[in-house]
Image (cartoon, rainbow, N blue to C red; front, side, top):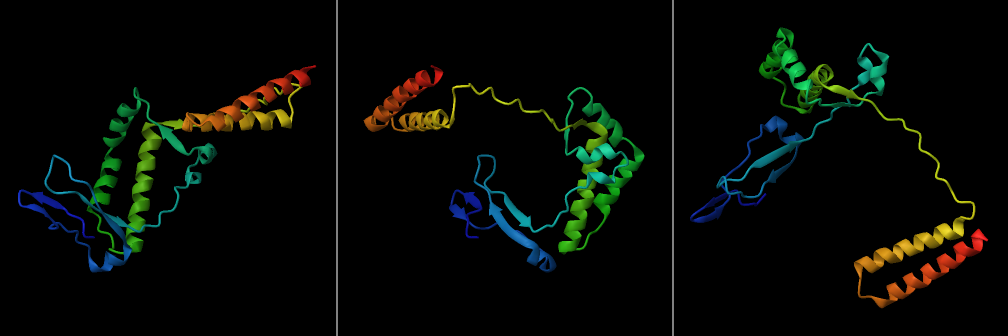
Length: 196
């Protein structure tokens, strides 16, 4: 990578490294070296692995309404207590311990399987402790179009707004200002004509 990873009184050097087993080397996407900070003279090195994860399927729940739920919301009043209560359950603790103790194969398939198991566990925790966020299906109200308004007025309004943004970006350019005020004058005249 060539990035410096250690800073000492003698200067910068590349002394840190990441170790990856040979069987997992083909799954390495890339390494990333973080910036130095005042807390340490070494930088953090991250390794990114290729991983195929299937999207969590909510249709597996018995309740057919689950298929429409995609996210959860943390309720500051109840969620913490529900989560602690759920985590104190013996079956959940055993599942967590089994997951931590289980050895997985050091290849693409092993990483994928473990990622899916972790995702399933986290979704189960969220299901039992968080509030389900439902999708809002609000009907958008149609805009009340004024009877005198038409495409010409809409286009002119769009041009005026574009020139207004150009004036904000270039406040000393007189051509934008001149064009803006000419369009504004034309716009006002057009509205008067359409109303009458």
